[in-house]
Length: 306
Image (cartoon, rainbow, N blue to C red):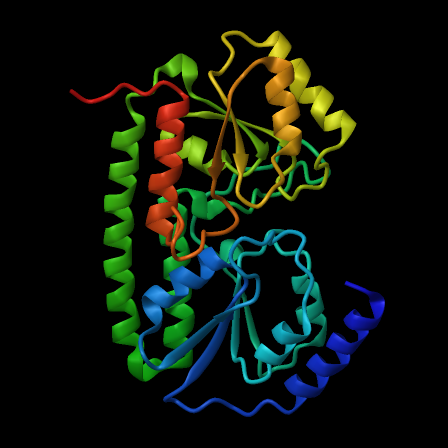
């Protein structure tokens, strides 16, 4: 985005936020930062909460830049649910321009869920933001969302908490189903070599080792250093994994190169930072995890049930 467009967005956002009216009890307008958060919010919202999203499906949440339509959508917004922990670097622009009438909720930081620390790259030692990749992490997000909605619409609190309980039960069932699908993968094959280091929580939940070519926020995407480091890992570690994986929001060109160099098949796409379109394999959160598990099961030599 050019500096001129950024400047126009900033002025427009300041003007809109400064004149935003207080919300009525019958209509609460919220925006989620990206599609996974959007779906979790919609599970609880009901008919009296309007839910919009900033980053469209299929786009890279890490590298997004606010657009004029994004700014217009914030005109009468009361709550922004964003993941936080560095996932959305652009959120700082909203933070800098918002006033007391706009509530920003950093869901991952508020969630009652044990974070993993990033072990490499520019963000080493910071919490990994991808907590939703474990259904237990997503359930912790649900609790934060329900509490926030109930605070803003207290007369509907019972409904929000009831939907939250239903969502947590569905996530428990999803967790069991994913574990069952993955349990046939041999222990020697349970390594996820992906382009982005976004599978740490998934690996912890389902007994995998996770390695990313670049960092959690694509800060070294395609760099010679990152590629050389993964080439060295593949050359020196035995047994080697049966496959490499690429994600839906990252170009596969770099993983293609590693795949050819290492003579390993490339599987995917896996979905992490975005759901697919409505007609795609990861149209919702449950479909995303089922799809990822199926791709992994096939690529890593999972046993077929008789």
